[in-house]
Image (tube, rainbow over all chains, first blue to last red; front, side, top):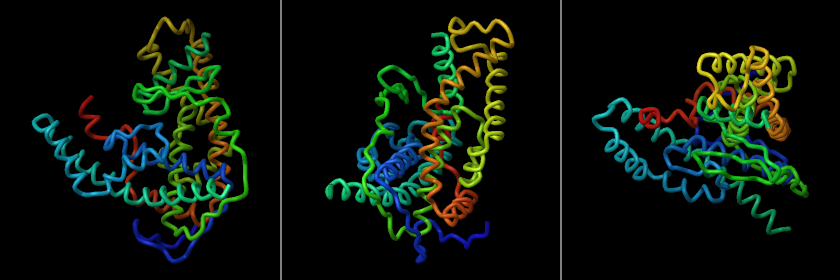
Length: 123
Length: 198
């Protein structure tokens, strides 16, 4: 399949794609987003794998800040220093990757939740 | 009873080796055991949601649609991994092709069964008393019984997820394939500190 080059993550593409879903399908996507976030960042945040997305978001939001990531890395350094420099270095890479991942995914997850909330409010 | 034990055994091994969800099918619902915590979801809790009027997700740019595709793929993989050997790096489009092809899913299930049998031959069952696979044929039967047990829930979940995936545009699937090559996958179980801790 031929595709145009994707913009870098975090950047927008003016060409839009719409998706029509019924509420059950939207719930399936929300569940998948929750699982996607949880599997990606579990070790960084100790996020409960089975938490609902609405409960997971407050736990993830602090990880949007560089300070939080640096604090996590400092914790890992204290824990593993002297045991394995490689582990500390890998944990650092992991932390920043997870941070970027949360930056990409969390705004969309919140937007989907808002759509669902709006649907509930409107009956 | 023996089949339940076998399934639990398989699920336990899966959790150890692939960090997959563990599922116990009980009269009251399905138990998810994650990090030592058990959550029970009543039967039908997901599938019996009342359908209402359609929702529209407008103005999603291509990157956002890729993220939706990736989320769906992650969950599909987590279920598929319980019952078959699946390449974790397959783009979503190829994963869908695989799951919709009975011959390929059958081959993938046989592959995981062979691997599990080999594992049991080398290391034995986690709780030897739970399984009385006296012969090679018994061992194969036990493994396939366990996979069949796990597949009840997994197949139902995969069907629901595939139905949503099929609503994504071909553009979104193509973009996901490109994203797949560009972005290093993040996944549970690969956290280096945890590996170091073990």
